Length: 180
Length: 129
Image (cartoon, rainbow over all chains, first blue to last red; front, side, top):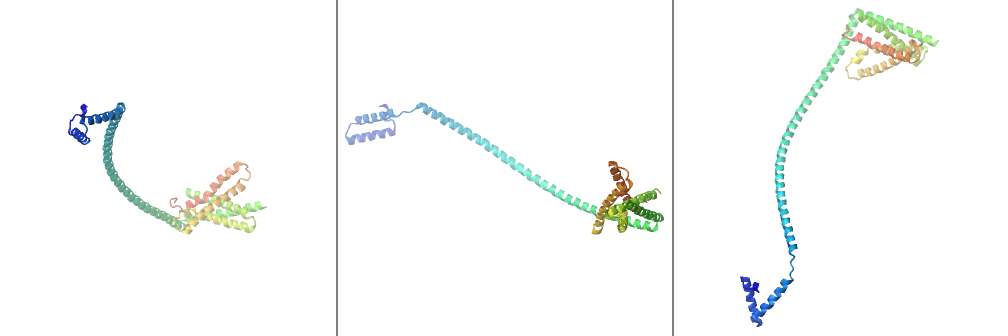
């Protein structure tokens, strides 16, 4: 009955309540305490606490808590890493934008150069055409002058005509010979 | 002088080309008098056309007549090659037989068919004088 001694305010309240009940029921206080203590003892004896399981559960909880801490640390580390990566991505993105702009400028330059080359090519083609036309006109004019003034050209013409006449005669002869 | 000699030489070959053209055409058209006359007229026309090879080929104009003339020139040279081959095969290489005849005929054809073009080059080229 050591545990039933009034040690605190709560215990005092309990003893005051027992005293009150005993007065109302007109019984001795020791009898009431006897029955109450007996009932409490019976309740205490019926409560079975598995210490091994309790320890296991405690260990499990401790382990879980440790894991939780580890995970929190891991998450913090990853968060830091992600922040670093985000910073790096921002820097790289800025660099990429800069390079894209540079590339766009180069593309524009290349486009302008291609345009100029095409223009030059076109004018070169025009010059080439003019050159061919001039060469052709020169051939025709030169031939016309030669035909008019050059006496050897006239001789060649006469010789060629003579050869042609001979050729025609030979051809007629050959055909007629073959016909026979 | 050598240029004149070359012109005369090419002129002789061109004349032979005309003979082969008359002969080749007559083998297609026939050997009656009218057909012979047509063959001669056609051969003269073809030779005259081939003698103007350089002005025809070098004409830079993109108009229809110069372009058409170039196409006609190409057909003319094809026809000339055909008649030269037929003429040389029958008239020059009559006694030779076998594959040798074909090879020589092809060689002669190339030589004879290029003669009018060469002569045209000599007649019309300004650098040759």
